Length: 94
Image 1 (cartoon, rainbow, N blue to C red):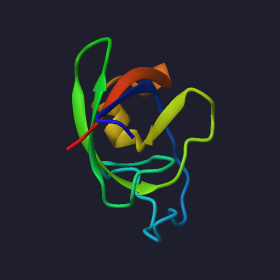
Image 2 (cartoon, one colour):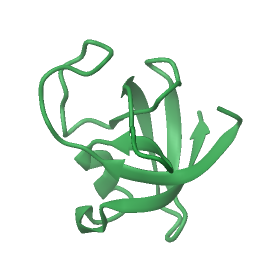
Image 3 (tube, rainbow, N blue to C red):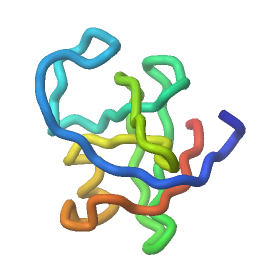
């Protein structure tokens, strides 16, 4: 990833274990990225309202073209209502 990445973000739910081996917790500020190392902290900024949240990468995904990050519901709600489903974001390493 370059210093910043612009793409779409979504949120995901589920359960079980993340790709890093952690238990998925929808109430944590974590997320999934295809290539960033586990433990990387990134700032995710909603491009339409400038709200930001800092998350820690602990999973892999998303696997939908045009999306670069999947967020837990708690992280997504810090940026937009869950009803939006997908938002335009900028992702920057912290």
